[in-house]
Amino acid sequence: MAKDLRWITIRELALQQGSLGLDNFKLLKRLGCGDIGTVYLAELVDSECLFALKVMDIEYLINRKKMLRAQAEREILEMLDHPFLPTLYAHFTTDNLSCLVMEYCPGGDLHVLRQRQPGRSFPEPAARFYVAEVLLALEYLHMLGVIYRDLKPENILVREDGHIMLSDFDLSLRCSVNPVLLRSSSVAANHQPRKLAGPCAESSCISSSCQPSCAQTSCFMARPPLPKPRKPKSSHRKLPQLVVEPIDARSNSFVGTHEYLAPEIIKGDGHGSAVDWWTFGVFLYELLYGKTPFRGPGNDETLANVVSQNLKFPENPSVSSNAKDLIKGLLVKEPENRLGSLRGAAEIKQHPFFEGLNWALIRSAAPPETRPCDVVTLTTAKKKKEGKCLEFRSNSEDLEFEVF
Image (cartoon, rainbow, N blue to C red; front, side, top):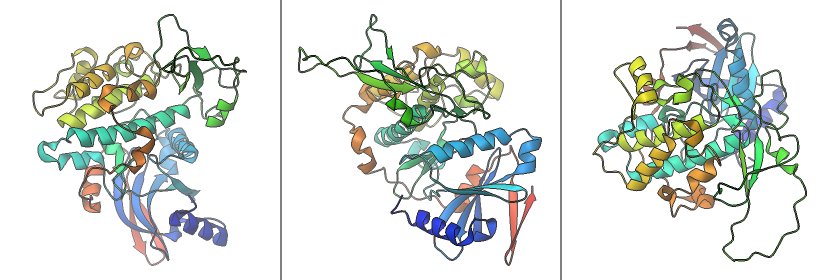
């Protein structure tokens, strides 16, 4: 953070003025229009610092009962400190607008980049690189008690250095987490997980009116005294593993993109963090094959396919058996049997598909070579029919927004 020129510039300006406003930014282009706001490429005045500025109409949010979603997104962004998740530099409100000043990713999104590849699919090494970084981001979110619920290539942005960044958290669900100590990396049938004591001993969803007493990683400090260690019988004995996963969280909300919806969401059975592992499987499938596995001619057919259709793999392109096996484990229709449902990301990281990957040094790995995505392409690709877009006109120092 200390080496980030954008942090330094934003903080100095905030100290000088006391607060930030729209007049501190020059809006260059509209990058995308989502369900609750419009994102612009913005330059901080009298600097060369570029940001992604999300502008939301407060009256619109209130009338459409989406204010809680906007508040939840801001609160989640304020919690984050991870190389594959966005940085929130500032937030401010005007009389009728709420604005988030976030990190700008000039590399475009994986949806656009995938369509530029031969056959509109990524080679397996490139797909493995991207899904590995996404997996680490999801693991961190789950540790904070955040279920993402909106994983898809359009929401995976590419930074200037080629590494990824998850975006869009307005559909995310905040829950408390339940730290569990497992005796080994493989849970035997007769070994019950040991729950830790402290404020995180219970898991429940956090409403907007509640304070997240255990959504922060500081709650991991509360643990019972450990027994006196014994000398291991074998040098290959596996150490206990701490798993922090919001497994017991439940929501009945019908949220997400049709092709990525988990079966339990469609059936209204209530869902927890396992929905992220379903979408992770669909995400990997799409990167490798250039399409999602259950897409039908219409939304209703797609939802029916997700619930009842068996998983099938095309003959082309050629994909390794390890990749297919991982997808099969993730796209299990019963969430309790899905890979990741018991130990979260720890289970998935140990799959042979990721064999040889140094998780600790992945941030230093060379990313796949991709051509940077221009702003015009982004604007076309990210525009949605849903929601409300805000267009702006600039007259000298005044900014005017209009709905379209």
